[in-house]
Image (tube, rainbow, N blue to C red):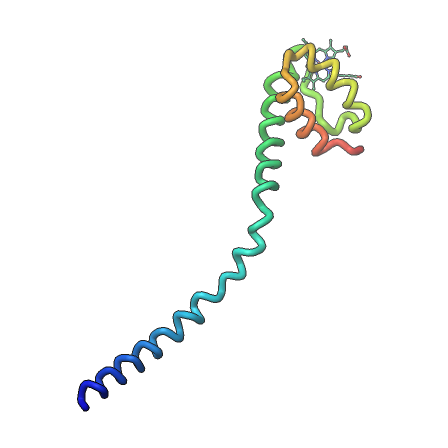
Length: 106
Ligand code: HEC
């Protein structure tokens, strides 16, 4: 008879300890808004990379222009002709364009 009482007491304890754990597992909600952030981070990193390329390669022959000096429509052909002068490959130029277009108006 004593054994049954002990088992009953132990299982009561287990239930008592188990219940708060289940509740504690629930507040995971703050994780959810962080889900879409990876693409954003990639974008920011790419713009930072483009800025670096721009600053390193685009002030060799003249002053460093600002992305806001021209709008995106004007920058298009300028970047095409400056790519040849700066000897940047297409991937590098895409990063420069991302950076310039991130500040220039359409
Ligand atoms: C080898 C020298 C050289 C390099 C490197 C160079 N440029 Fe130029 N850039 C020029 C010359 C020369 C001009 C003026 C004549 C022309 O437009 O070709 C010019 C003009 C410009 C202008 C003014 C265009 C206008 O219509 O007033 C901008 C903006 C410009 N460059 C941006 C850049 C950017 C961005 C880069 C880097 C990707 C770059 N340049 C790299 C030589 C260079």
